[in-house]
Length: 252
Image (cartoon, helix red, strand yellow):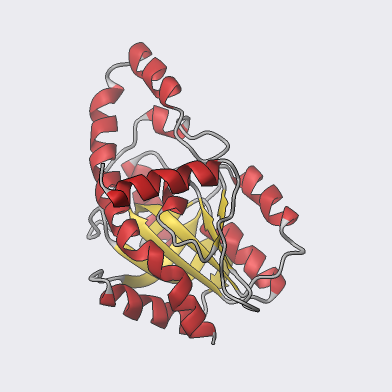
């Protein structure tokens, strides 16, 4: 096992045990980074505060409420997203210039958008700028993605960005969202994908195996989703360590 993979696994274990691993520097307020999965949070550096939703909007709302008295310098939504724009392939980084959710629209801080795009470019990742949609439940079908694309014009969709943006707006904090396309617009997800995430943001492998035993036809869809997410996690791994330093630069 390489040192990088070993460090990533160790960080995932620490995150599951609830350790923030924050060292933002003397006198500096940390950046709150909202993710859905432990593996997404493990791509971050140790200089931010990760908050893992477990892909559950209700859990994330409660977790954000618990942090209402915390002091942060900014809020970032970071992780995977479902593609809505058919031109986007797995692994495409999107830096949002706004977040849409039903009848609401949240602005992203232009300075943070610019710094993230330029910083990711320096890491060899060409980011797309555009809208991201926030939803309460995963969109599992290509038809559902196409409908949301027509209605919202968003490039991608996730389950955390709108809640993180609302928290930032309530607190008067700068907000940004950096999301990587995992399943592309034309890809339907197998039903078990909606059940496989535990409340702590880790993957429930025994449940996945049980579901495959009951309905093995889901295996091909799961393999495709795994290949898509592999490309997405590689992009997250290249960009995640830069989130803290880039935002400190933007906010200094």
